[in-house]
Length: 378
Image (cartoon, rainbow, N blue to C red; front, side, top):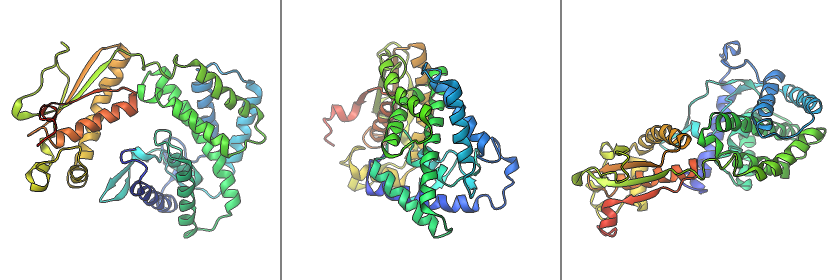
């Protein structure tokens, strides 16, 4: 999480959930659901498709033993139970942190083309149980209560049944996500998804500690075996990229001193020009500070388009990262330059290194060429 588990971040989650309520209740008023891309409704068939997705792309790929007949029967029963939940409203389908953009401290939503008619609880489950976010349990509880309080201002609902339905929908969402990690990570060998499998399993374990899975004995047994067997299979699957030889250097520099040379013999890597961002160094209060000082960080995040800049930089780097990891390459250099190598490039370098750590588990070598040479005294 970019700013950690702070009150500011929690408030943004609450704002996002409040906005979600309005989107759910009004988003489908003039929408022809028959024209939805993937399915018109999150009905029994759609739920069953998600459960089978999990079965084929996660259970089978990990060679988890299960009774096919009994598990199929339980999937049918679970899909039917969720398919009978009412009322149905607009369901965002992929409501998670990466699809929420913050501008002027307000949330804005993107990437809802997979939307359909569905139960209200699904989108809440998607956000609060997002694997990479790793929200603390008390946060999940508080945010879920906030969502229900906001929803109650608009419609009436029976809380006990709402909560019971929520617990099952969380489970289905967690299983669907594991299926996605299996397909994208194990089959397609995309490191971001592969490295997310332990987080997805941890979420499933957390769910089991809070909710009971009655009437679903085979699925319960499968979940228990997953928690043990897949852990024992490591590092064979989940940590497949951990032993990779790839060494990544992320560094900041000053264009006044020239673009740094790649000493690995790899011919250089990415060079990102940060000079299009407003320079904090123009202002007296920041002249002695660097991109690691809170005042400069706040300036960049509130007064410039650094978030947008880094979003695109990360997306470009990710393409090469996944390819380099798959092909066993050994070196990659990523450089961020600005006028003096003090503010913008320092901030972006640290942000990129953190991204590589969180996404690929890689501890990049971080160099701040100007600041290191000056012993960070400006």
